[in-house]
Image (cartoon, rainbow, N blue to C red; front, side):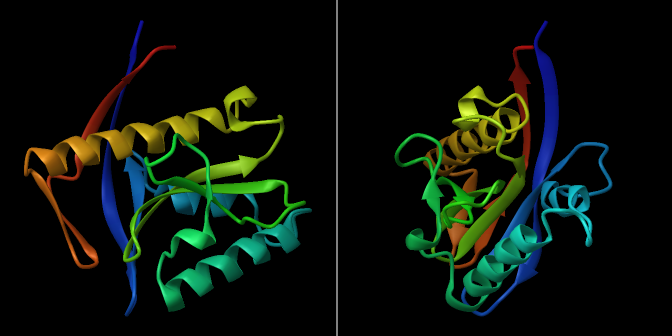
Length: 164
């Protein structure tokens, strides 16, 4: 039985060079980005890695979502990437880079397999962003979503059907 997920993309923070968005699942109080940070409270064993991720986010906030700040995770060209690109980090925060000026944060967690495809924990987060990338691309093609400078304009509510 396919599972139906409804969610929206919403603006989190605006900076001079980039806007940060995140996904909020229908009925959830927190965005996916907030849920990510809530999983790793201060004082947990991943403090240093959380700090690394925050410092990457700060760099992106200051300089824009340049391609070099992300390691591609989905298929080539879908914009799905991971922070940080530092080797040795076990924590992964997934995001969707729509341009140098627009970044959509998803969720993430501890890398517990060789690849996200093999991880029951991480795969759903990456698949959600891959689907979101596909939805946004098709909505841009049909004109119902427009990217203007740092903004995503249009209907940012999505529904996806996921096989269980």
